[in-house]
Length: 280
Image (cartoon, rainbow, N blue to C red; front, side, top):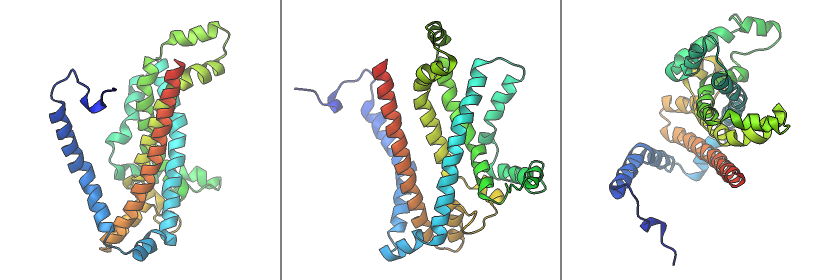
């Protein structure tokens, strides 16, 4: 008879105590606040709940928040891979400086980042004035929201992909080249399958970070309802109006949609890991 997973012995002692502490800490820091959010939402009747989450203003904020977050994460997926590749595969003057600059969005307060981006992309800003001449409005538009989310999400992709690139041996690429593979074939058939799980992880982290972003977006968006208003700002507006149940309802919708999307990404990552492991 097959032994139960839970009865399988472990080399490391203290499993029960460690599991209990981890569960307690997770419950205190994560599960308890989420339960409080759901509890506050349950104070609304179904009609009141639906009226809050399905209003035209709320739906417009969902579209902007999740749409801009997805686009920003997709852009970071491409350019984050390029930045990580350059940092790992090439040696050049100023490499340490660029490597440190990648982490700048982590250290920079989001409000400061928002002010800086607004100053740059405003119609009279360094870059904004040239975009305006071309008929492109960056600040106070969905484009500005996307630019802010790209800024804060780039480090997640770079720092997730970078260690995997460092572990990939160059001899594998040389062997593929010796067998007649060109650079595109080497990347698509050798490098990309090995990088795919880390790319998906970086995408998920960048997307999750963008969905909940507030400080860097609130300045550059212009906060125009139905146009450039993100859902976190709408939640803050309801909190300022002491509508805690309405804010909790919007937060619950954000939580549910984010959880479903991240679950799908994690399932895709798990499938990629199994497929790559089976081929290896």
